[in-house]
Image (cartoon, rainbow over all chains, first blue to last red; front, top):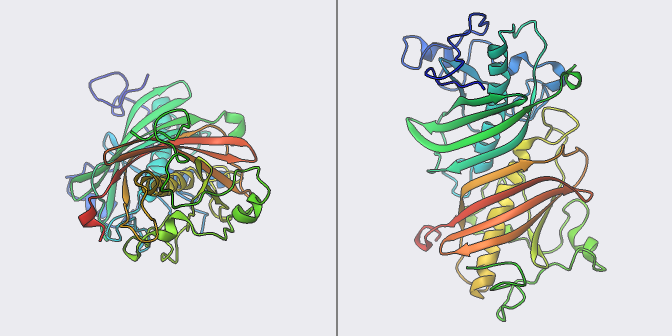
Amino acid sequence: MFLASPSKGYTLKENPKRRIEPCPKKNSKNVNTILGKDNHMTMKAFQDYYSETFASCFGCGRLNEHGLHIKSYWDGEESVCRFKPKHYHTGGFPENVYGGLIASLMDCHGAGTAYAATHLKNGSNIDTDPASRYVTAALHVDYLAPTPMNESLELRGKVKEIRGRKVIVSMTLSVKETVCAKGEVVMVRIPEASVS
Amino acid sequence: MFLASPSKGYTLKENPKRRIEPCPKKNSKNVNTILGKDNHMTMKAFQDYYSETFASCFGCGRLNEHGLHIKSYWDGEESVCRFKPKHYHTGGFPENVYGGLIASLMDCHGAGTAYAATHLKNGSNIDTDPASRYVTAALHVDYLAPTPMNESLELRGKVKEIRGRKVIVSMTLSVKETVCAKGEVVMVRIPEASVS
């Protein structure tokens, strides 16, 4: 079992073969340069490593011209994704973000986190070693507070468990330090033969 | 508590003040005329009754030019929504539908079902009586099988419970009789003062 908590089991820091460098901690000096305010990342995201076969996802595929282009990165022990909704991503109340978009962000950020965490656990090189792609088995979202429009949304993910082919990722979605939603995904790794 | 099951408590059929006519049963003679194959409905959907204030939702708002325009109707004791994904609504595997879209469909179909079921329970007139709008408190989706692209998706909803301001709707998403996903939403009614 893989636990992201530093106090239990395998942690990101303890892996000597770690190949994916995390983003700096949130409060470090140059975090805004790297993470940007509107998801203007300057480093390669988890999703940028997906093979072309899997790069057409509406949520996170770099080759989907109409897609959301969700990008996820390590930030210390957590994964982070920043996303600025388009003006039309409104919910029932036009001043709030659409709940389906929030679920979509959690789906792709959870999948990306599972992918990157597997590489870390295995000590494999994300640039050269075979990809480990995941599909979503279950998605749960609790909407805790309205998510305001015209703001950058910050998703943070933690790997709760890696066991066999299954990875569970818990997430929060925040705006300016206010947690607006919490979620959890259960991702299942696709057999290697299906990924090539 | 409101139970959609004919065998328990309040049912749609038992309400003498019923004002929203259901669609015909799925196997009835003219169901295809009314429901169409690609969501080409000829009758007014739940979402068409929403006031302009709430018609901007990306998922189901008729006034959102960029939105999905999800439409829900009664079909006997169940609510039904048919939706044909756009060519770009692909998931990790390009031949399958994006999981975030499935979550979005369940979010809006669940909200619409909660709205319409409240009118039925109260015996109120959906054309003239005050609206009862809902926000999503929780959304859960279990992805049971890949959902193929280039097909019409059929969502079916059942009201599991109405208690106070809360409505729970369980749903399935099927393609040609195969259930590809199951879901459940917990919707909470907005206080009347917020709806005007």
